[in-house]
Length: 50
Length: 232
Figure 1 (tube, rainbow over the protein chains, first blue to last red):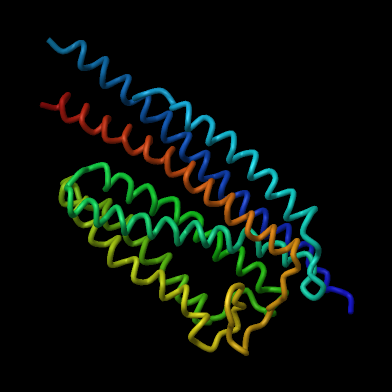
Figure 2 (figure 1 turned 30 degrees about the vertical axis):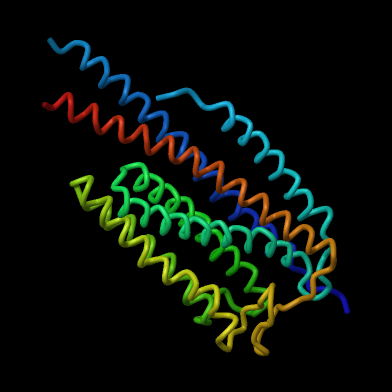
């Protein structure tokens, strides 16, 4: 018996798996960069205070 | 914030290499299943992402207990990190399972015990994120998070055993499943190796992401402290 043609579903499945993982990685990176900027700004403010 | 530890750098590289190998095994090493065809390859990462989900929820329950016992803020940060990662991976497992189900079961979704309990787990932890975001006092937030993570974890074993105890169309990979299961298949040695390797690789991915997310949490704590200092 020939297997049914399900290649498109496989691609869709892996597009979701890789896509969501990539989005999460990017979100970690973006949040990290933003927090680093916040730390820098807050430290500068702290230094300026008398 | 300390620079990225050497061990984390090594873990990043090892995890990335292992992930590439796992992808290679899924597409080029594991044979095509003779009934379902190519879509069966979704199974390897579908189960592995569900595994990461359950692992993270377990870690969060353990860190919840540790927070209640020791009252140390780091356990709250760890619990939040574990739950965030698990939510993402459990979501992947649910959606990839739905894509696999379409050609195998003839439907994207059915309120089968496994699918229903998995959805409940995802919603329970999504509620955790929303509810804790609404609490301003850090100590109250941490206490709430710890208790919620412990109680919320009760939903996880329910999902795991649902396909072993109840009549379900969801296949059982390890152990005997329901006679009503559809899309069941016997794993060849190459399939089994790919499956076990995928579980191992996703455990590395979880550890690596957890470490990164912990560092992010620590940095967020630092920002919060600096803000408080600036205000007062």
